[in-house]
Length: 413
Image (cartoon, rainbow, N blue to C red; front, side):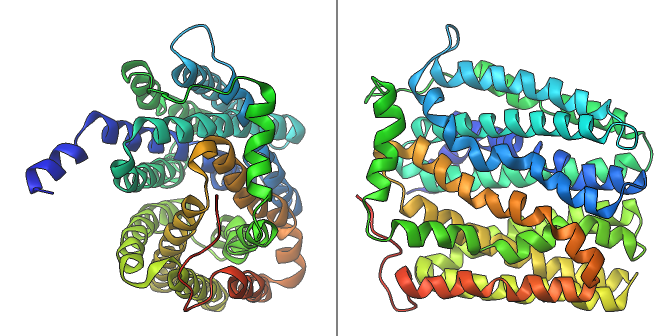
């Protein structure tokens, strides 16, 4: 393809929308995880309670339950995709503002409820964005569009993480959450201006077709359960470690600004670089070998936090650990996403992708819920060593359906 044609595709309406929607999807995630953890830590909330707050992210793991309804039914205005998306975005902004008005000390259950609603509307937005992107992009644009979506997603996470942490050193958390809600306006504007995608195959004609058929098709595959187990376990180690990194940084002496600048800002760039670098490596090695290589690097990078626990308040050590860990995470995420795309049946993309990404989110919510208690009882060094070792079962599952010399990752219809 000529350079002029490549540039015209990159700066096309579809690609710009993919980037902005990725940003809109990524921004809310950390508002109920690391930024909320920082707020509760600053207010003196017990570490065990902070760990249990991971449960408010359950909607990310259960979104496949209502994804078929958003496939089957359309709202009266703006079309099936844009109508649901606009509603989710408006309710999400209100929920974020409401979360900022709660009090972690006097009303922790109200904090949990508000955070749960943020997660619910954010997960619902994700369902529609994934479906919109798949229908809006041409087949030959899916790779580039997905890459730009991930870049936008990381940009949104950086704004909520890095920007949110730095703002929290100068403003109150309620004000920070209002600002974060307003930062979602570009996503809402993109929804209003972009057209409804064409659906030549139409929408499901019945609830059975929307709910039952996608799952039936998937579970008829020979390796279906092994693949689901792999999706649950491949990133469980670095996910559990990541659930406690914010209290860890604060506990060993780093300031909010240092965390915002190095962990969230520099780290976001390292993750994006890792994702792009991982994509290049996959072109040469393929998905199977990349899953092995990147999984190994993810486990080793998690062990870096155990080293940092011994170093303590050391900016050079923090920078080195974050650079390696985030590069590894970016590469692992790229291979992970490529694997899930390779096993999705195009006829049921929205619902099956919601199922797979829901399972992907279970470790972040369920397995991470007890990490506060574990870190408190084991100590930081032992906790991060445990997170390194727990990555091994997911790696071993690759022997079943993605061996080093294999030619394909999984069977699909």
